[in-house]
Length: 234
Image (cartoon, rainbow, N blue to C red; front, side, top):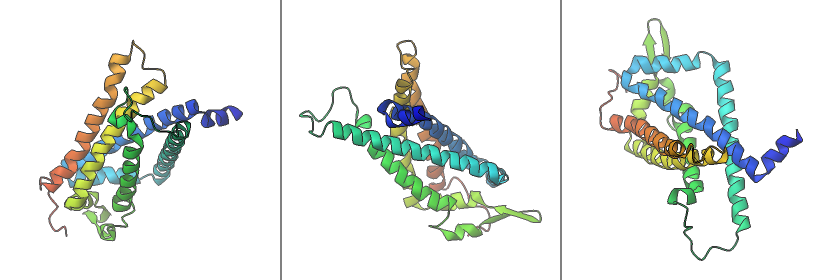
């Protein structure tokens, strides 16, 4: 297993691990967005989707642990590379704006940190429901059975202006992060060649735009009252 240790401890290996875990996280972000957009299909559709996800808790937790491991690896490797780069150049450049860099590339750690902070809040808000324990009581009656009323929880959550606006800002920063990160992943994996560059240089920005539009549509529509609460919801 020495090769794995050497891979993880080298700067090239760290970039490869960042790229691979980044692919996993991008896939999750897109899948999560598609699932969330079902709020526009109505209460029954979204709650059925959520119930389906919860129906096999073993598989669900395996996926959660895999995502957690990927996320932790991504954050750790990016932090280590940032610290290594700072240590390699302790004296600031006279020209603080490198010629070939962009605002996004110079501030990846900032957008990454903000997204991490938002993700923590998002999990506490909608998954663990610590910030709003009353969400635990939301259920939908389906015949003699009940199931968690995720639809009502989401609509109630995003009807709070602070929550909706925070979500929108976080998604804009996530879009900036994804746009550069995806392009960097292609570069790391050797796919950013002259042959493929016309395609690879567009994948990041296009994916980022799709993710941002898909994710901000939901809170903005709910905040504008376009997605109704079900009758009797408190």
